[in-house]
Length: 496
Ligand SMILES: *Cc1c(COP(=O)(O)O)cnc(C)c1O
Image (cartoon, rainbow, N blue to C red; front, side, top):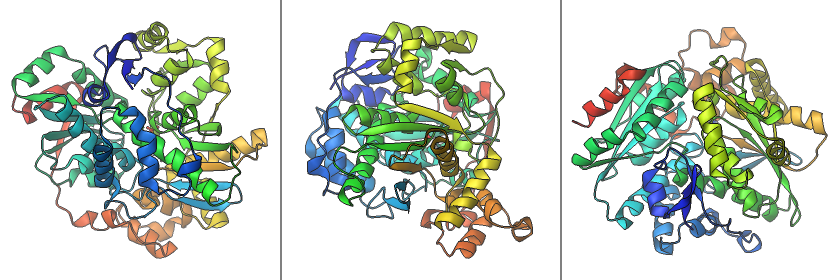
């Protein structure tokens, strides 16, 4: 499989180039240039996560050997995950399941991709005979940063720089990042929101002069954001694995279609589900769940993507995003891979703040996607309801998905078996979860970190191992910059 940019269809790149470059030279995103491989499901039903993963991933990595792919999978999922199933399903009610994507080392779904990507990236650079140090430059809405730090920590030939919005991440997320160990990691806060941090990072990744200066010092940028194709690849796997588990356990019949509900921010996770459907996975609806920053819901309903709107901080900070980068890939695929069209929409978004798609594309979107949003009040209500009704504890992002699923059921009456993507451990957002479950006086006097033991005591569940000693870890990163200062910060850390 070769790859091309969403903004220029003719120039082809290998998988190794695609993964090590991250962003295409013209500012577009890399996408497969060939037809989508078709995965045959029947012989994967009684296989484990590793074999399923190899079957899904291998067709995209033609010049990687089976041994290379398997060893990367082992390094990624062999020891760092606390559940043997890696991404297990939990039955909530008949026909309704939670896909638990938070058993990895940082307790959020980003681990599924970011435990794997570093090993893939190393192999990709090897294949290109590229001896430079990979500088992973990342903007995070909270969970990516920690997952990237954990994935790349002390990996030879790499350095990691993480920018997070000062006011936009939870206290536990912030603690996870600023206490990160490792000789090759640097964590900095940016005054502003996630979109500011992401825009700053994108700018540096496409800055030719900066690239030249880096090259002279034996350094080269790479991205661990979900714009990197190497992140989407391992995310397709758990859509297949969830479906195969449903088949294996007799919850669905051969060929039966299922819905996935995905709490969405940068559109990476749900895009992987869309790609899985193109690879033969029987998907009925992909339900895009948004929070109060519902730019995507408006887009799916009205066909206009408009980022000119107020930005809200919500209880689901990893979804507080106004520019969902990966949507560009969906538009490319559904507009019959027309790079000129995609390029003009992206230009309009940059210059005017919005773009309008045509009726044909709207119809193509509506055939598979459905979208709604949940505000903070509904999010809290969903956490509480899930615990009362299903005895199942969920974090605010998963709660957004559950709340939107109920709206979907009410609006459509659809009874198709449905999988909710559960994207973070409830302990990672213990403050909001406690608020949903306990009266205010019970939580009074507890710090953000102190909410975790309170939640454990209330529910009888264990705090995930990676979160247990967070308050005892020394703070290692204290830097804060303004948006224009990001570049200086990078130059300084890299001694350029
Ligand atoms: C990143 C994240 C999301 C959003 O995923 P996207 O791929 O950006 O759409 C949702 N929930 C949690 C907990 C996350 O960390």
